[in-house]
Image 1 (tube, rainbow, N blue to C red):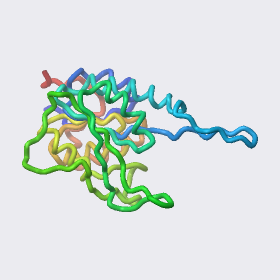
Image 2 (tube, rainbow, N blue to C red):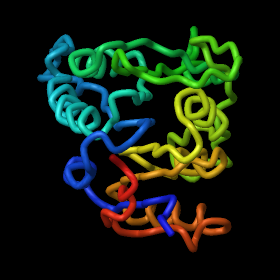
Image 3 (cartoon, rainbow, N blue to C red):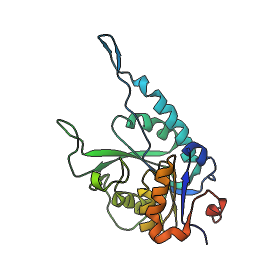
Length: 238
């Protein structure tokens, strides 16, 4: 019996190289990003520069090429980001896909800040011309309103709500399709796959989070869960 889920502990770039080309139907991921450093010298404060984000841009260029390679031509890519990282993530994504659109995730609650406090995140949605979509008669807007997971209920600092991930999955994949998350974290993408009858692959560099995700999945699918990246998972792929 083919396993429905794969939890892979390792560096995402190295592990993605082991995944066959054009083998996954959808990618949903929340990559790490950093704010540029503030530069001080004595009493002088240097103006921050867009070039400070170069390491992040180079990182995402490498990641995006691998994501495009493993994604089927009719598949979809969803990348979570914020207003600071969006410009950096956008260009490499634009260069590798035919269509790119911004989706707003409205968290429905006001978050941190002083004035105009945070209430949303951005999602870069990318696909090729021949992308598929699910014609289920549901009207979907590019503003998705789903409450953020409460801090007390999170197993990961930036955990995304399963309901939001399910909405992305249901709109772009069929049952049995493969959904991939390169930065798995607490595994909410895989949980959303389980609840929508999709297969899921997740990579995380943290062994602790990989063990946590396996435990989250174990109640109903432990017998189908594999902890390695054997080729059998893709045996039915063209």
